[in-house]
Image (cartoon, rainbow, N blue to C red):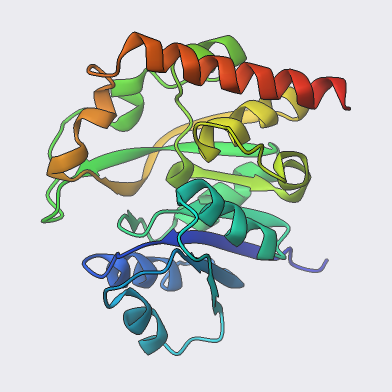
Amino acid sequence: MKRKKISVCMATYNGEDYIKKQIESILNQTLQVDEIIISDDNSNDLTLNIIKKFNNPKIKIIKNLKKGVINNFENSLKESTGDYIFLVDQDDIWELDKVDKIIKSLRKYDLVVHNAKIINSNDDVILKETFFDIRNSKKGILKNLYKNRYIGCCMAFNRKILEKVLPFPKDIPMHDSWIGLIAELYGNVYFETETLIYYRRHENNVTELNNSKNKKLKQLQIRWRLLKNLFIKVIKK
């Protein structure tokens, strides 16, 4: 039986500090990926130079011209050719058996979300709790509309889901919540409790993790935009 193709889709912007470690952790997987599609949003640091130094034929760089993180990921996803697609941020670190373990789950499920340990800028684990512990991560459309547990860098899915999520609606609040909810509508989702990446949190964005300071109005707006676009998707089916 022919081996199914594995794509990794990354969005970068001024990621020179950590991009090398992230790419190394992908290239050194026990089960090798077939392509790494990197969409760069007009970085003005050394990000692209660092990527090009790998001189690896699996890596494909495309330009996004400052259109924002959601469009940047969409740009990468549109160029992917794999049967299985992994999302990746520019500053995390993968466990070396991540791909192997997730592919085994993707033979049963359409989308898999796995757990993560949380590290700081020095690669130190900063919390005993995992990402799933903090977010009480589990599937459920209503649960995830109320509080999103889908995190892109911990997600992988098959091409059926990719074709359902593209193109992204122009006003979705984030790509990962959109992909996760669409997968719940049109496929089967699995939350893997094993930690398979080191998820980097920086000093200037730690509040994003616990969501404690988000204003209620903003949360309502996010839920409304997601719900509206899900409804439009369903009626167009």
